[in-house]
Every structure is written in structure tokens, then in C-alpha cells.
Length: 353
Image (cartoon, rainbow, N blue to C red; front, side, top):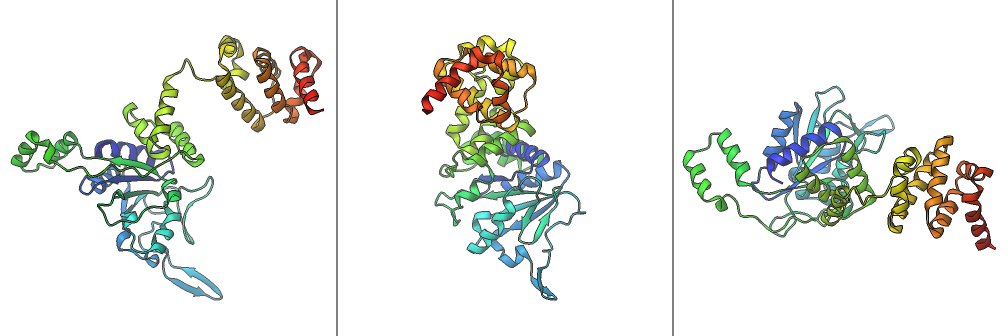
């Protein structure tokens, strides 16, 4: 993505989530300038931490005693609870000169757990303040540290590349010299020499999919950017497969909500699903009922109707899983469902003998 697109994504993430964007780009592409501009456009105060010039004490504060208790003074850069909403920019994260500095900031760039506040040692950061990171890619052309995979997994990686048209609009707004702008209009290849690919080997993880879920529920990105954003969390291959799956509505498995709440409308689709697609629907049903096992009478009948259209093996598999959920097992044991469920229970019992 270019700098303008990066600004759009950062504003959306910062305004609507607690996730931490990490802007990855070669020198001079406009990472810092773009972050500052995005900060101004959402009316936030900007604080820059040049981590390449900082030590642990600059981050966690100076220790002092109060009686028998050790405390750490609040660093001057750390905004207080009542300060205006602030964006803290952890710049040059992978240029931290000391390993303990990088370890100290690890906790701070990690998004806060649900119901908790972002932390840095003993200090807490109000939810009104947000954090963004920027780095140069570790491609061998910069004197940077290789980031721990666990740290990369906690951020939304945004890869920013040079783009002539984006730069030309910026140059016009800043009224850069006309002869420079005219030269580059005819020689856009001279704008910047792209370095090596900026692949940080991002891979799918449980945490990554949770971040994708957060973004899908809270943020709206233009279609051409959505895949890029997800690729920075779960990797390009998984992001492509996910976006294709989203586009293929006809082949998408029925959800538990559709089976339980809209059975008359989806019954024909349910009966015609391939076995691998049925397996996805079954997994969603079991997970949903494990969390919310109480069914209305209508949902009970819809669940049994779905069980009845399944092939024999899948029917046995689903009933076996549902019988491990006490309230659902009690519902399925009613006499009126014998013709659908009883045979499956008999087969399960025979297999256990």
C-alpha cells in the first residue's frame, strides 16, 4: 500500500480498536510523516519514542523507595489519564540498541487483554491513548534487529511502498520545486529505488485470526486494501484464501445461526452441502451450543431437522458431540425426536460396547 492508504488504515484501526499497527517500509518512503498526518487528521496529540536512542530507564522510569516498597517514576513522555487523546509512536522499534530495551517495549506494543489496560512495567495507559509502531524491514540493508516472532504476531503489519502518484499529490500540496516535480513526472522510476521484499514471514495464528475478527467487526477498509491488511496479520496465503472464501457466498457453509434460526430458508442448501462443507457447519454448531446450550422449542426442531438431512456417518458424529452437552442431550432425548436421533444413539452405544 502507499502512504495515503496507510494513513487511512491507521486512522480506522486507531479510532475503532485497541490493536497496534506496525508500519514497515524502506527509508524515506514517508512512514513517520504519514503517521503524524494521520494523527492530526483524527485530532490526537503525537508523542514520538525514538527507540534507537532509548534505554530501559527511559521507558520504565527511575526507581525510588517509599518505605519498604519500590516504585518507578512515570516517564515524562507517558500521557496521563486526563491528558488529551494521544498517539504514541514507537519509532525504529527494531533499532533498539539493547536487548533489554526491546524486551521492555514488548509489553507496551502488545494490545491490552480484554478488560485490561495497556501496560509498561508498573505503568498503565488509559484506553483513550493508542500506540503505533514503525520499522525498517530486516532485509540485510539496514542495521536492525530481527524481531521476535511472538512480537510480530501481536501487531498488524502494514507494508508501505513508494508510489509516484501519491508522492506527486504530496509534492503539489507542499509546493515543492516545480522543476523537481516536472522531472519526476517524466522519470517516476527515479523517485525511489525499491529495496528487497519486506516479508516478515507472518503466519496464521489463533491471535492473528482474533485480530482479523476485531477488524472485520469494527473497521471498514476499501476492498483493495482489505486483503493487504489481513495479509499483514495472518500471511498472504491465508489472507487470499479467506478473501476468496468471503467472495464465494454460494459455496460458503451454513452457520449455526442459520441452521438454528432460519431453517426453512436454508433447508435445501443444508441437504445439498458437500461433506467437507457439512463438517464446517457441524463444527460451528457444536462450538455455538457449547457456549450457548439453551435452545428454544423452535431451535430444537430446526436442529433435529438438520440432523435428519445429514448422511449417516455425519449424523452419528454430530449427535455424539451434542450428547456431551447436557442441556442439548436432554432436548434430543425427547420421544418426539426418536425417529431421527434414536438410531444415531443406538449406533454410538453399539460402538462403545
